[in-house]
Image 1 (cartoon, helix red, strand yellow):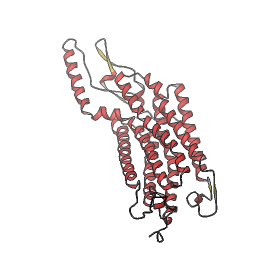
Image 2 (image 1 turned 180 degrees about the horizontal axis):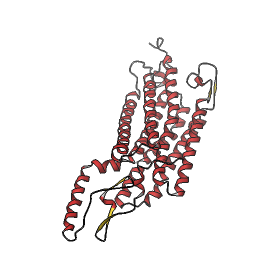
Image 3 (image 1 turned 60 degrees about the horizontal axis):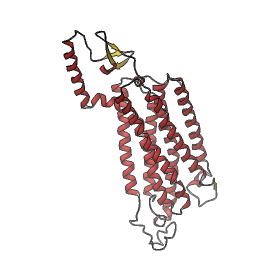
Image 4 (image 1 turned 30 degrees about the horizontal axis):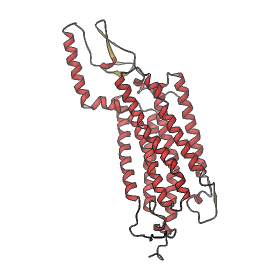
Length: 353
């Protein structure tokens, strides 16, 4: 068997090559991709449904980047599935020599997709922030600066990574003539950029969210959604910390799979978090407690009407934006719509950046 299917490297002392049913990460990784894709698909569907059907508004640039990120996630996972099929996740001594080049080819192309996927998620966040915080001049400049920085650095990194080897195919097939940059430079640069921009996107809205004109419950709920982004930052830092393992060890097919786990989590958690920004509106529409709260307010309104004749309405539309009863206050026996909070800019399309 060893002669028919030569392994990439010889097994270490105490190990024996196994090409039939080797220990590998394939099943676990495929399960992780499947779960992440399912959650991301549900999140994107909820986001688009909320935007179009509940908020009754057109899709904006942030939504299109969210859809783009989801499409890239599907492509990324599909390429990784193929790489697992060709042995990524096995130990190198269990990897047939004939499988190595196609395995590395699918993984390398998946890396290229990843370099487009991560900025798409971040731009979706930043453009969503622009919807809400554009009236704040300071925030507007910070958001635009973030959009420019993320776009320029990640596009530059994408092309540098593609052409790090001459010819390009030498990145996955090093049996022929060619040369590449030192292998430790670009992965560390990519990881550092990804982690730093993750933190920037996460921390950028915190101060402004605390100053929004909303109830404490809504403010805490919004901050809770943003805090989910901490998971994306953590996974990005873990992936960066594991980068050296890939290049310091000869067991690359095994270690690639380990790092891919954190890359999958980073991308999908970030994508899901960008969709959760609209989850409060979805819950307000369909969560049963919202119905109970409505009848409770209705009873309370009828009870108060016995004391003073005041006409109440359940909702109104001002400037094309729906206002719930919580956005009204009672002034001199009348219901007067109070100033709209920043979160009600959800239907306003981002202005040209």
